[in-house]
Image 1 (cartoon, one colour):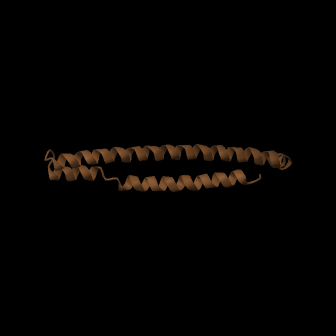
Image 2: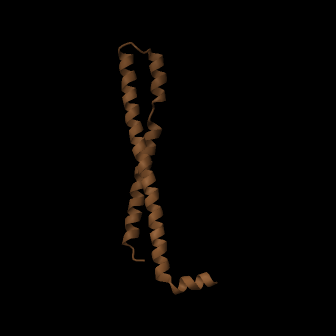
Image 3: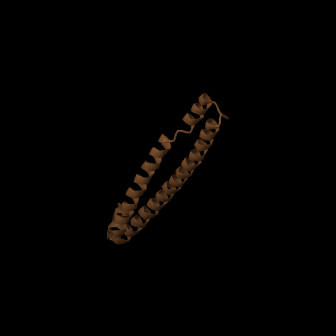
Length: 106
């Protein structure tokens, strides 16, 4: 009961504190997603380089066709590319929400 009365008496201050806390949490989550996005992009680049290398080895006869197929299956990136798209969408959505939150008068 006392907490409710305190919040009611200091509603504006309470809103500011909660808004700041919400912004901080959103910023932290956004930073983590950006980090994951960067890691996924780097991994795709690395896999592209590796795939090119095994392709060239196969073309020059250094790697058998069956071994090439096994390795190329291991370097399949579809799942990683889907994750990349999902992260981009989540980041965009969260940035829009943060922008809306910043523009909202508390």
